[in-house]
Length: 440
Ligand code: ASP
Ligand code: MG
Image (tube, rainbow, N blue to C red; front, side):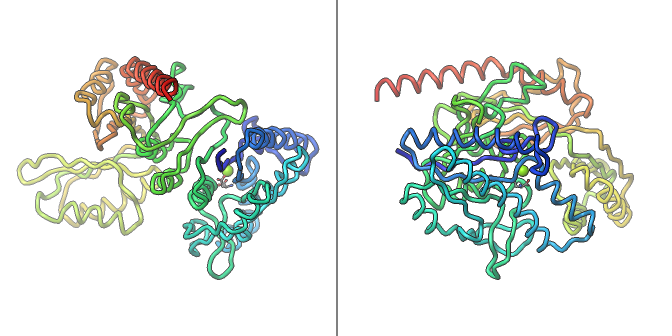
């Protein structure tokens, strides 16, 4: 018997997926919500019938948070942050009460809790608060009484007693924080996908479902925007050792476990291939090759709150060199402006840029122990006649910057280059687990 935190997101509770917004004000919306909540209630009921204790963490239904923000924006484009948090938090409050009602209907005693009621204490940075502490008293009492506590995700309370929110998509963080505080055995994320895939199955139909993945790989995937989970929730899980399980609410098959790295994972050279098309490149030419040049360039950007991702400095020729880097597309215009000013000040050459680039990354813990991964990846790109603009690496990631138009093809050929190894490693790990189970 285990204590399991189960997180249900907007897609499990609303109708976003079908291109219609679940809205309790219209009857067809209401019946769709009934259908969704009943299905999710069955998930909780099933775990309870198996003898587990469950704590549910919910986000707002479907597109609710966006709808609330649109209303506020229409009233006042400069809405005070405190009031926006108070408003957004109502989305999750609707979910938890409705879900408690749905659970009672199927004979599961349940009790809803807002962030304030639980005591999810945060700092006071409205719209991007960080959790400091989760008070477990009321949750523990409810569990001891045989009830399912249902916690509103995404929200907390500041020392002043004000309602705060954790940043968009933040209910993942709430779920892991609650799981960590309760020392839960697992934190399950119920999604409309079967788990984490080796790449986007819409790009590569043969993409593999990953059975088990390390926190570090998942963090890389999440920060590339492909991990399905909020990256801060993965960080939290890693720090507190909370095992995560990303799975489907449509069936009972296991999904992807996110767990500490183990030996068997080393066989997986590449577990995921991810395109990212939200970055732009800038190149500052003919900068003086003297100490302080790079510092000057990047201080200017940092002061404007622009974060830089990939960086390359070319070897100096004739006392001059060039620096290229990428920033988020939304910061491109501002970064150009700042760079031009800095280059003028330093007496450099031109500033050029390109916002039609893509970063394609391969992620895998096996890179640490296997040689030739980069070579294989670059060869796959070369064979497909795809030119590489920039390269960056970390211990478990290789990224290339290429033309945006080549992104899809690059993902295909890189995935193909490593696909057989992925299949073999997956089969081997499954065989190992079977053997371990048989031996146990
Ligand atoms: N409802 C919030 C949002 O849409 C939190 C979440 O979904 O995790 O950002
Ligand atoms: Mg949401």
